[in-house]
Length: 263
Image (tube, rainbow, N blue to C red; front, side):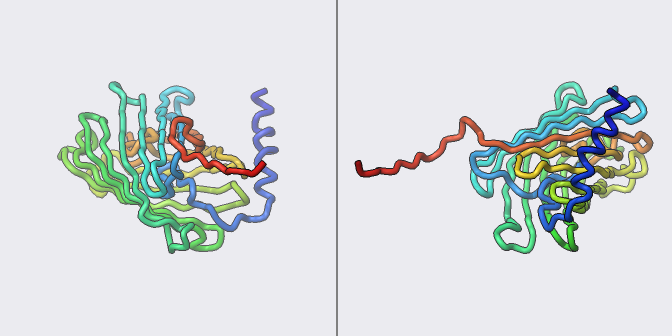
């Protein structure tokens, strides 16, 4: 079965590689290091699961993470992230507010995010993400800026820290994209000691479904805001996968439409 697996994967991906290039949606699902600035709709939930492994010890040394989101309105959403990479559990709770939506005939998408992470004593965080599809034919671009009120385990001078990054997504076909990004703390001493985050991978959205799969490699931590910003070390290459989907929240109140008909 293991010998047949590469051929099965090739057979699944080849039709997409040979299809006509897609015209949009490149950055709608973000990259491994930069989440999409597009919010989920009101009453919908987002689920994102990721596993990121040390390539030298695969499948050991895993860094799993789970992200759940809930759309409260067109612009406002709640965001929860948890990772078991560290003990106690790394938890993250945030609020997202979308300022601009490219699908409302605006030039780009722009979202702010404010939250708190329990990582290593806790820190407030703020994030601004922007993206533009079809900046060039089939090419989507994303930018991110991050601020942490306290970072203690990645610097010799614990305190606040900022970071920035950029990502690209190139559509090979409908639903199939090459993605990559670079995210780095804006502190030279941290980069000299730990390096910076980078990733590249293949993102596959199954057309007409809410399912997305990402295969990735690079230098990164767990799928939390800290893990997407700070590299665990300078030398170890990591590989991983990410799956995300959106669906209607079963507990969310909805208005009922009643239609009166004549007998």
